Length: 140
Image 1 (cartoon, one colour):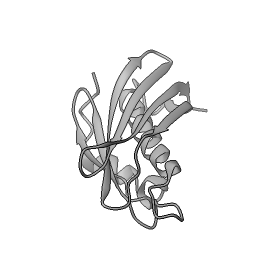
Image 2 (image 1 turned 90 degrees about the horizontal axis):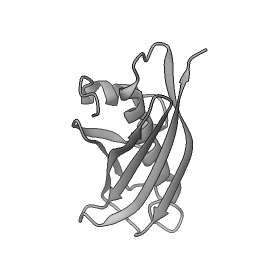
Image 3 (image 1 turned 135 degrees about the vertical axis):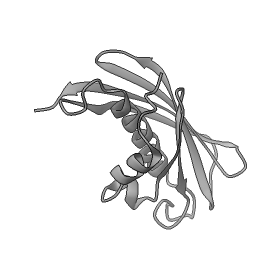
């Protein structure tokens, strides 16, 4: 279902010079059913108590879902995918290492995409469960 004509190199190149790159998010896998990325749990992504910041988890989830929607566009020159709703349940803390996210499509429509994003820690324990809705719009 996910277009796999994009490479990890292309996705990671798009991340330079924006929040995705600043937080150290790296795309790690593209399949026809999901895309995956990892993010370090370090001084860029922790809150003052030394735990992974919930906002950093949301950035990871929205970045993955937005890129996944972009990968699904029929005409990326004339269309854009924009987030219109995201929720996140923070289920477990992380203090170091990396967190790993996988993004699966729940609904791919002509004008709306819905994504399920699960974020796990180095042990494979679920840290955050998120759902993102994107709207497909015409660029101006």
